[in-house]
Amino acid sequence: MRRIGYVFERFPSFGQTFCYREVAELDRQGIEVTVFSLRKPSGEPRQDWDERIVRKIHYLPAETELVKEVGRAIRRRGFPVEAVSAITGWGRKSDFLRLYQAAYIGWRLREVSVTRVHAHFAGMAARTAYWIKQFFGIQYSVTAHANDIFAPSDFVVSLADVVDAAAAVIAVSDFAASRLRGQFPESAPKIHRVYNGVDLPATDGAHSSADPPLILSVGRLIEKKGFGNLINACALLNSQGQKFRCEIIGDGPLEPTLLAQIDEAQLHNVVELLGPRTQREIAERLRTATMFVLACTTEAGGGMDNLPTVIMEAMAAGLPVISTPIAGLPEMVEPGATGDLVPEGNASALANAIARLLGDPGTAARLGACGRAVAAERFSIESNVRQLLRVLDRQ
Image 1 (cartoon, rainbow, N blue to C red):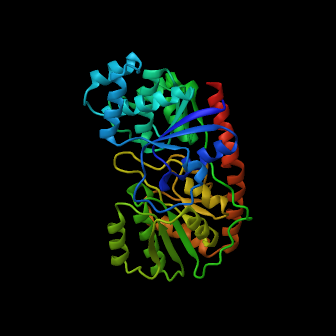
Image 2 (cartoon, helix red, strand yellow):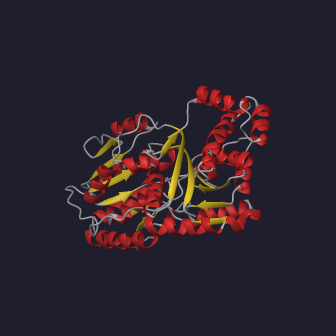
Image 3 (cartoon, rainbow, N blue to C red):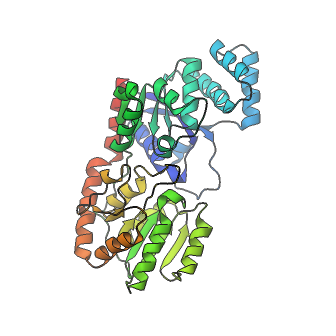
């Protein structure tokens, strides 16, 4: 397979840099990638995206223009009868735009003779790929990630429909692959685990220059990232007289709540919300940090992180990692080898794990070095994209 179409809800996105890396690595390995983004990212920090990749992106028209354009094409009698019948019969029922998006994309894929499409997340993009197959017979595969399978939304085209119609389903952790196989046993043979990949830094790893020691965390400011628990742990460390700083990079709906929590605990001098940063800036903070902490937790509705790519990035940078033993996290963080895992929601256990590393720089360095070796072996973007291609080529 030397040509493939990709469908994303938004691309490229600051919160989904693993998607950008995958497309860029496919391009580097000589695969001709045609990229469709259902929506254009907005309000995100400027990133250093490669212009060669950005030029490959085809952004779909907004709803009104999209409906008009597909309607004009239908009236010219150029669309497959399956598409015309489904679109006219569906009307304005829930998720109707997926049908129009599928018609728009599928027609263009057929024009350039692309016979395989891949979607990231088993949500909007995957449902669009589902209809592309129904209308044009173009096979699709999907990479499932976290809440799209742990807490899927209720649509007429369900997660079960997406999995059943897909030629291949990629899960980004063994945990997620096992869960999907148990949930959809008839589709088990086509469910595969392929880890997300990261670029390995050219340096040997982190060499912390922070004084006081820097605890770094990165992610959307949402419940499942557990930032509230990290702030509680920092309050405990501060009360014990530990010398440290904690920086949290990211933005999101919980920012006012977390700022109020920092204010109430009088942590202004030790905990800071930095807002979003570019990938280059994040890489720089990883190089100077002492450890990386992401206190992931399970949301009330079952949503949770699966395999946060930022932990791979921290490991690749040579940092010890502290997190929680949910979903695919134990596939990255091994207590005593690459970092530590503590019970979710337990601020005391988190504070104790952080304190152990603050008090033992030698152990922190050893865990970081092991983590870098694991990242090189397990999470290299080059080798993981080759694995993805082998899976897709067999379908």
